Image (cartoon, rainbow, N blue to C red; front, side, top):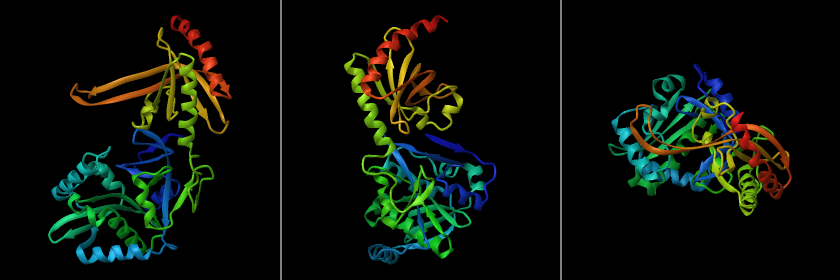
Length: 355
């Protein structure tokens, strides 16, 4: 599974609890779940996390941080505020951290529909009359879901991003909640690792579909790392055989709902495509983890650059890479077998264009 997305018409707080417990997370007015994410241009395995508030106790170092900031700043808890002050702070924060993020706070909330669907609250941090940080979180019956944390770049040294998450946890415990959900971490070191510092997290094991007290993957053995490694070996073997090879991220990772719009679109997160110089058909090599083997598919590679919207207005260029499946050409044990059979099959695809 790459990802799933739901846009419920109604969502009770108890239903939100259930989705969170199964590894779903809010994006705008939708709920999503995924096994993979793209970070620094590479495929990574996502690991969903939560904190059991019944067992949680803040470490002394975190209590000192919270006490220090409590003396320095004023904290308020209340309704979400969507105003110019918040938007301007978000714009400065977004400019500092970069990456692919919602363009506005209204987009973060999913517009009016999202605000009506979820029970969202705010923790705000003030220095005098100046708003210097805030976080938004959704309330379930027994759970709190952290939605976003924003802080003033000039106050970065105070660790206000982590501080607002600690305040969320403290507030959730005071409300009698059982779990605090902060989304995912990655199987490899990343900027998401600050979430691990709040306490002893639980991790969702995607195979067993249960929460455990340690990461579900051994070092270098996450599904994303194995896929990158195996497909890299196959790409090298194909290149040695003289094939035209392209190893790219599947654009269905970046564009929710894209696979539903295009029939027979491969949902493999990494596309290892062997193309022909003579015709538009090609071969797709995939690594099947459960079978511990490769598989080869025929079909049509799609690679286009979108640089305008539906109205013809120029936009930031976006590369789209897909593979439209046609036939299953079987399983293979090694990268060398893939290279051998790719040379055999690729010329045979051309006559199908005249059918």
